Length: 348
Image (cartoon, rainbow, N blue to C red; front, side, top):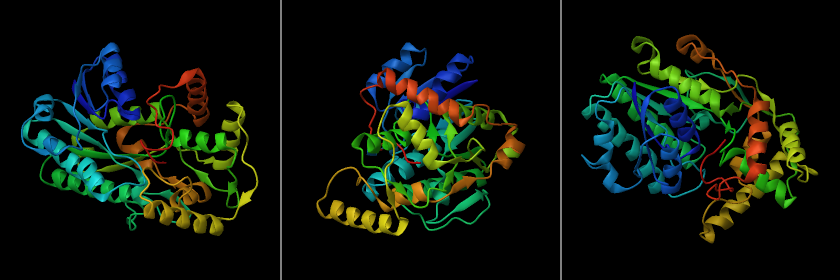
């Protein structure tokens, strides 16, 4: 099997590219980061530097088309993943970038497109349990979610026109190399100013990155008649209490545990104020506390993964405790310097 992985210098894409190579696939990784690309090549994965957020990447021809030509599978993992940022930047990276990948798949006789989306498209500002793929999508909570929803629409349209394409929505990836979910929490713990937000009863799905890789490979090899045009939720399938998990993370890294309580309503008010000040001062990145972060930490958000179990023959094999322990070991050993610790590479 010949595969192409976009976003191979990222967290999920990097794990996927290495697994495919170890399993005997012929795989090429695409990404922006030269240093991470060199590490991929050292692991036996040929690397092509390519940034889907550039205008040149969206024109016909070029390295994307050449690399994708006649591939059995293209795994589209690349994305601009952060709750905050200009609309135009999200559009270039996540919408126009996905359109370019679809065009390369169509023009290059690619066997299958496996598109990585995000369950943020399902997010509401309240508890949501066992969300199914068929549930109506709410108004996007962030610009990132809006761009991922638009990208899903492009993939669905391509599938309706004959492209063999499948969409996966893995939730809250954790494990060694995580540059978004747990590092955000670590940064807040290091500041010593992380209160328990809400009533501390919220639970959430997380996904050990190895389980997500398993699901991607299962989606790539499942019968075409089953998966074409389908969307699948992916998680560990065992919701974890958010605040006890954060307390375990603090203890493992010898950091101050969460202290005090912040009522959810007050948290939303602080988040809104932070966002207004952040926008008025045109600060880069995101506020230390936003309304979205308050909601993620104080509401229960879980997915129904029954369809993926049934259609893909997939099941999560590693528990959340494994992903947390391996993240802690990686972090304590000295994470790579390019890890962006304030959440610019992904969202829960």
